[in-house]
Amino acid sequence: MPPTDIEQVLVSVRAQMDLDRETEHEVLEEIRSHLEEVVAEAQAQGADEAEALVQAAARFGVEEVGTTLQEVHAGWGTADAVIAAGLPVICALVLRWLVFAPDGTALGWPQVLVRPAFWTIALAALLVPLLKFERWRYALVSWGFFWIITVIFALGEAARW
Amino acid sequence: MSLQNQIRKGSTETLILSLLAEEPMYGYQISQELHQRSGGYFEMKEGLLYPTLHRMAQEELLASEWRETGTARRRKYYAITDKGRRALSEQTTEWRTFIQKLMRLLDAPEGATPAG
Image (tube, rainbow over all chains, first blue to last red; front, side, top):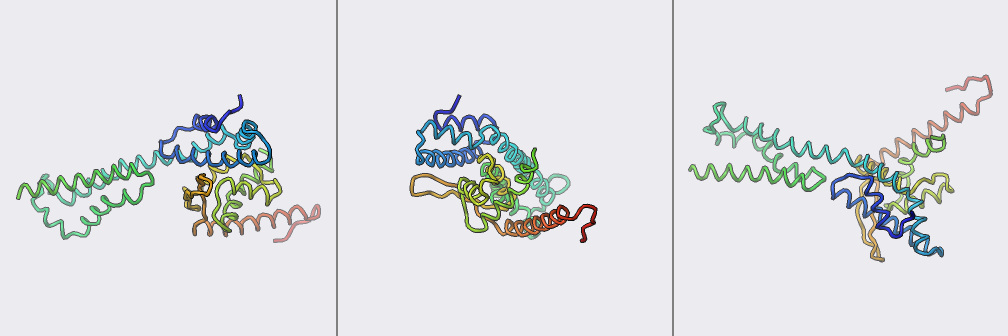
C-alpha cells in the first residue's frame, strides 16, 4: 500500500531501526528533510501530492535504508555505553589507589595533592567524559558521578576538620 | 551483485569526498550532483547515501551541521574535514593507478605481457 504522507514513510524507516532516541530523531529529521525536497521537486514538475510521495519513497528505498542505518549506528551506542560505564570504575580505582593507604585509611591524603598523577587522573575523570562522548547523556552521567564523588569527599574531609 | 554495482559501491566514498571538496552540501544536493555529473551512471537509491554519509562522519572524514533555509526547511550540510581531504587524495591516487593498470591489461594484445 503506497504511503499517504511523509510520516508513514518515516514510520517504515523507523520500523527497521532500534537506535537510541537522540540518534533516531536526528536520522529521521534528515530523511524527512530529504523527502520534503523530493516531494517539492516532483510537485513543481506537475505531480500531485500523493504521486509525488510515492515517487519520493520509491527513489529513497525505505526498508533497505533503515536496515543499513541501523548497522552504521548500532555499534556506537554500545561502545559509548561500555566506555561510559567502565571509565568511572577505572578512574575510581586509580584514585583510590593514589589516595588511600593499603589498610583503607586516608591518613596521608594531603600528600597526594602535590602528586601530578593525582591531578591528571582527577581532571581527566572530571572533564574527559564531558568533552569526549558524543551522546550527552553518557557524558553527563560520568561527569555527574565524579563531581558528586568529589563533593562528598570534600564535605567528608571538611566535616572531619 | 553486478560489476557495475560493485564499482559504484566501491567508489561512492571517493565521489562524495570529491563533491564536498568543492563546497559543503546536503544529502539531496549530493545525490542530485552525483546523478547530473555522471549522466545517471552513479544513480542509486537516494536513501543509501545516508548510511555512507553517517559512516564517513563517524570516521571524521566529514563534519555535519544543521542549517535553516529561507523556506522554514532545515538541511543537514556535510563538509569535508582535513582527514577527509587526505583520504580523498589517497583514494584518487589509488583509483588512477587501478584504472591505469586495468586499462593496460585490457588493452594489451592477446598473448603479450604488459610491462610495469
